[in-house]
Image (cartoon, rainbow, N blue to C red; front, side, top):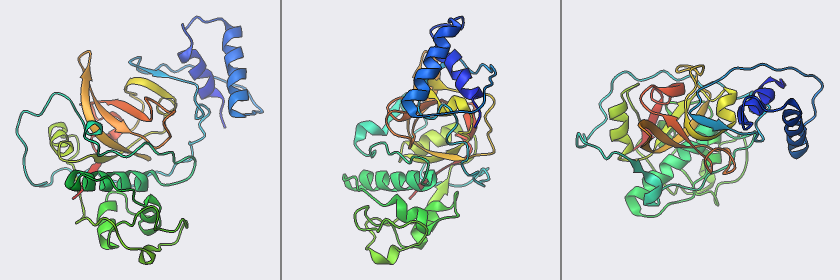
Length: 291
């Protein structure tokens, strides 16, 4: 495991780039004690990223999630997605204010982010329809849909819907959907055409979205606040999933509001604002939703 990203973060999170060396070393030693880390080597490099957001020395600062699985997903170029909304959407929108977004989860070093976000999107869709937000089993989705990524919502439809979290057994690797009664059923899933921002907004105004992104860069793992953008991340090779719950604008910069699954201590209380309109890390090329 490389120490390089930790040294980078120490430089970025200090009060100034010219912070005294002894202060950086002190913060490095404090971080290792706080998170129980021990290392056998030393090293470092400096690679500045977009200054429009802040990083912090969180528990992922040494790349503990660097072994994430890459997802095979091809962007959809064009597809008919149903009803069209008015051409003048609101300037800002946030599903959190509607009471249809579940609390931030923490997948830790285990668990499928696709399954977690798929469950969140199905639950949100049910809440929009009925006014009640169910607690569904992401474990069931992970067990019964181990391979599909772009087709995860079709898979949920095919196995009959999602059981509640309390009725599905906590067993990894074995699909046991027959052991419980599905609480929510869906018809399947649809993809948002790649890089069509206006269409993504229209779809988002109807329900939250699942977006696959490249979250492999240290700048994402140690994100703290602000509008995230990193030119080094990929738009085509994706390894993580987020729930897109809204959008907004700050100081002339538009952004997507996305919920992560790394706990409330990460980012902005578990959320990240991602630069909108430039397909940052593929967020606008790999979005889908249940219906």
